[in-house]
Length: 118
Image (cartoon, rainbow, N blue to C red; front, top):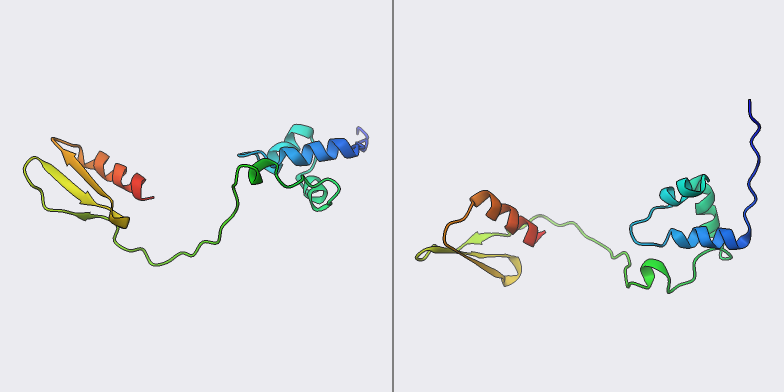
């Protein structure tokens, strides 16, 4: 059986690895795999102010942050207005309206409306 050797990381290497976890779309697990280190060790480094990325880097710099969310009972979102002529008008939540003229595929229209109201 091969004997494992313990890797010694310099403070600068730890800071660099911790900074990589702040990149948009990158998880601690991905960074851990990149360096063949356990993700829990990176989390431990992130708790240490000596290695924690300074504010103004990563997602904070881009103005991204978590906001509180409250899930409420779903209200009706779509109300179809009466068709007039060769078009339909759909009123979306928030007072926005969508007018469709000519022929259309109902399934595609439903997907479009759901995408706009998501």
